[in-house]
Image 1 (cartoon, rainbow, N blue to C red):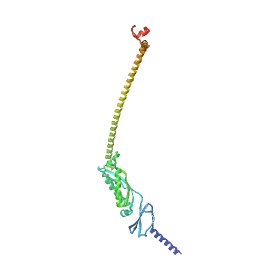
Image 2: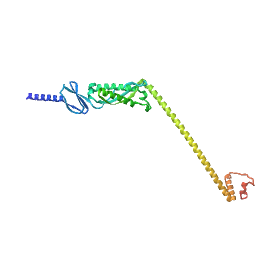
Image 3: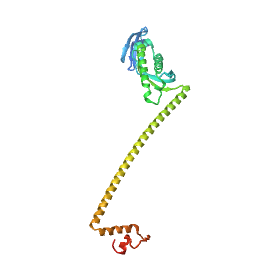
Length: 293
């Protein structure tokens, strides 16, 4: 009885080992290649349960099909105006052709070594075509970082696809730095550029202020001249109106007119503190002496 149980258990174990060596599972995040004696015979891109010949006849190579992010070490490059810059970049990539990937690089760590070389070569070539002001500048129109990284991406994408079966989605610049020996000179140049721009803006501001002051002075003189003209016109019209009123009053009753004018004269120059010495035949005293003007 014991031997039968042992034989059954051994049989079940052998069956399990055979089934396990024949069937395999491919997940949603994987690509698989079935190899026969080390030579690829089948590429599996869809998830599910698959079958193969038992090992060691056939085996399965698995690769991650997800988008992967690679962050190579920062590297130093030379610009067209002979300035050293340190560029820290990263890229997103994934396996596009698993068969070519297996034949060329075999695994992720080796692939990232080749990708680092591609990125360094493309960055070196592109930064060498531009001056430092295309990478670092206070004038936004002179910056060319987006164009540079677009060309780097295109160069790496073409090479990685043709040589390694890798699709590169994008190469981006994470950080741009300067070697310590170059920082001071670059900062001095940036300060000088800022001072030049500040002087330019101040000069333009002064010029605009002078124009505004000149226009304001011109408008002020025009307004004052117009106001003076209108005031003189109004005074002239008032004097003319007063003269007409005086003439009309005089023509109606000359005696009464003289009386009113004489009283107005008294009110203007006589008060309790005024002493006037006049001769008895003065016309001014006729109203006081004779009772008529």
